[in-house]
Amino acid sequence: MSGALGFSTLGCSGAPLEEVLATARRHGAPGVELRAAADEPVHTGTGAEELAVVRRRFDDAGVAVLTVCSYVHLCAPDPDEEPSGAPDAQVEDVLAHARLATALGARGVRVFMRDADLRDHVEGDEPTAGEERALRRLAEVAERLGPGVRVLVETHDSHSSAQRMARFLTLLEARTPHHPCGVVWDSAHTWVHGEAPAQSLDLLWPWLDYVQVKDVRSPQDPLPVAPGAGSYPIHQLARALHDRGWEGPVSLEWERKWHPELPTIDEALAAARPWAAPLFGGTTP
Image (cartoon, rainbow, N blue to C red; front, side, top):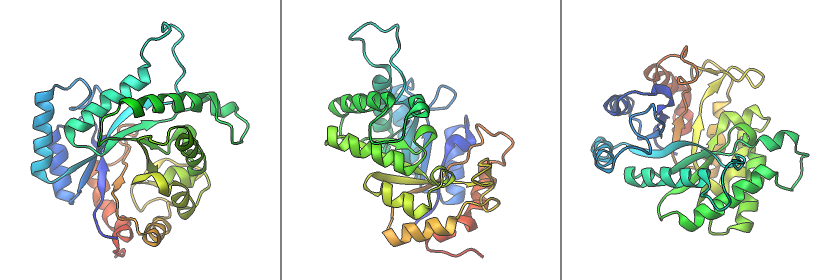
């Protein structure tokens, strides 16, 4: 496997895009996960002309937008106050972010499940009420989404385990065979939930779009730490990806937005270079 490590702008939230691109150039990052929110340079309210300029800047820099990172919650309850027949807010949010992704030439839109119903759910094959809402929403998105953009569900919160995510996506395939969904594999989340990297990769393989990596203190204390300073088994991940022949993107998810005490994205990428070398066929010094 060959390539280089991309990164998420979660690690430099609010930074001007020229700074983001300069960081990508310094570290040879081929792709960026672009956080889309009101406190970022680019979001669903950004005008078409400005988006065209942003896309040219990324194209000129030779940096791809891996995904537009939304905060859509597919399993969110339907608001009680909405009248019958009103547009579904989560569906509309997915589609708004999809238009943004299309304008930027991004691979897809990152979404979450965030299923509060799963906490009280008896483990089994039957979907929760939240998952039923997600299935309904994704069926509608599939009917309305234009070509070329995927909806990328991250292994996160209620669906951090690859087992739960694969179960949901298998059910989605049965109900909506033409669905537009893939997976962003946060490999630390699945590991913290007791799955070895090879096990998670096997489960997620049919839908895998790209891989996120980060280091954490331990499964019992999963706070992010500088790459190489924690206990995430990067060599196990490298072996699993190599054995499967993975050649897709790999991105460093650096959560400085939520943990401002962390080092800068520059420091994190510098530390990640030797730590992540096995992912791209290299060895640590």
